[in-house]
Length: 125
Image (cartoon, rainbow, N blue to C red; front, side):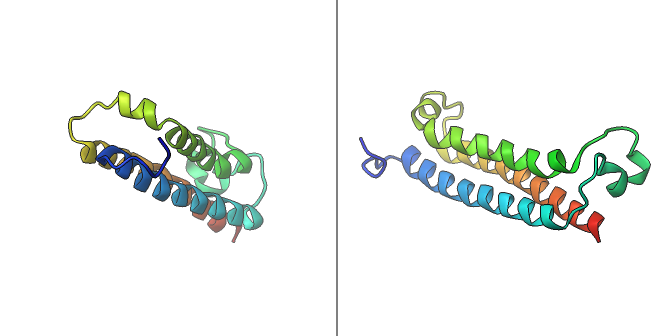
């Protein structure tokens, strides 16, 4: 069975979810790379973004910008190549609810990635 041969709901929703998740991963990487051009490259960027909480966690610019896009990329590749595994491990009866829950989690990770890039951009201004 090829990618376009399957006509059931799971395959159709998986194809739509994978495409949109891939677009979100691409946008996340583009925003992080753009922020990397203008953000200050320091050992502890948290001190510039949150001066009061700078002693709690030390995070370099590299990990601050590229950790979330890397996690999103790993998740996207797992979803892309693990279609049949995901089909067999379906937890909810309704496929639409399952993909909606996955979309909420993916959007949350995407939002955090963009938020971090924008925070790094503001720290560089």
